[in-house]
Length: 401
Ligand code: FAD
Image 1 (cartoon, rainbow, N blue to C red):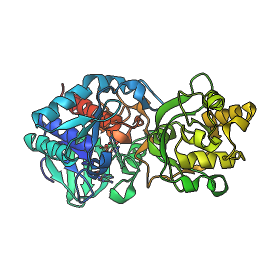
Image 2: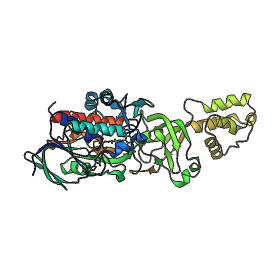
Image 3: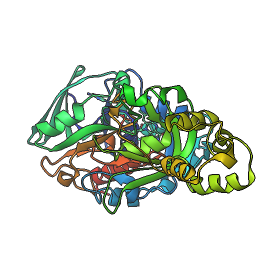
Image 4: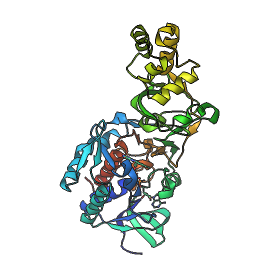
């Protein structure tokens, strides 16, 4: 067996590479192992190929998990501004798109090259593709069986991500390893994912596929339902777009979604006002407030004659139309699943991890970082910020800083 490593990191994705670079530069001898042939595939496909690498406003409130305070310390110690500074040092151009979301101007490849350069600066060794077959605790650390032989290390960092997009290398390795060392794993479920509806419910809406509009979307009950103002996209099988991806992380099977298709506008009042001064047909007035195809489908669904001249409409009917548009309630029958999910909600229970170091409270020297942990960000750069912050916390703690 070769000389022991200070740390072996399993997973050369966002969190694994970032952790390796920092740990290496702080003087640790680091080996990163990934079974996929290509490095950091998820960064490559993220943000439509431009990687929404952080969110200027990332804060603990933008994350969910069973232990919501866990992410506070790491997020406070490695902030979006820190990652922006790193990008600036590499002269990587970027821009803000929407609600604090920062994207590369050129390509996600810029972020990957930067992470690899950081690893190089830390003299990190990377084995890829290489399978990890087994991890065992020893009196001095760990033995790691790989298809390039057995390695020993003082510490092991699990950075194997979640279950989404299995075709580019996602596995449940991290969850299995956590369980092997006695950790509880919060049931993983697809999040930031399009939602689907049963065929009879969706038959009337499937022809609207491709229509996008800004909506208020809400789920949950009680004093604090989750609510977002974002774009909604109709698809052949259901609903997608940022509004639905955001709400999907909070949606529970069986619960309805409530959608306001004309946020900030009282459609009933606007139609009644139009009635006083317009001789146009009802269909034209509704189409002035909504995309035409949606307006047509909505009137057909409500069994209202779109060709009725406005003066002949009934106030009660206009009010009912407005109410239906501002509170469309429908219950998904499921989601598009791991194939389309951007992230995994659930994961290694954070109550059994140290929030300063991401180290297991059950097995000293074993750390979990990034998406494998039960910390899930909203859509908009928050998941990468968690990957960077948890990786930095872990690397610094391993180096005694
Ligand atoms: P990953 O980046 O997934 O890395 C895990 C690594 O572990 C992979 O390289 C994998 O090959 C390796 N691995 C897995 N199993 C094993 C094993 N058994 N042995 C060895 N290696 C293994 N987030 C944002 O913040 N902004 C975005 O713009 C954004 N866009 C996204 C777009 C898509 C389509 C998807 C799917 C996700 C997107 N995300 C985005 C989420 C973001 O990519 C992840 O949250 C982030 O990559 C998690 O980092 P990670 O290092 O924990 O896991």
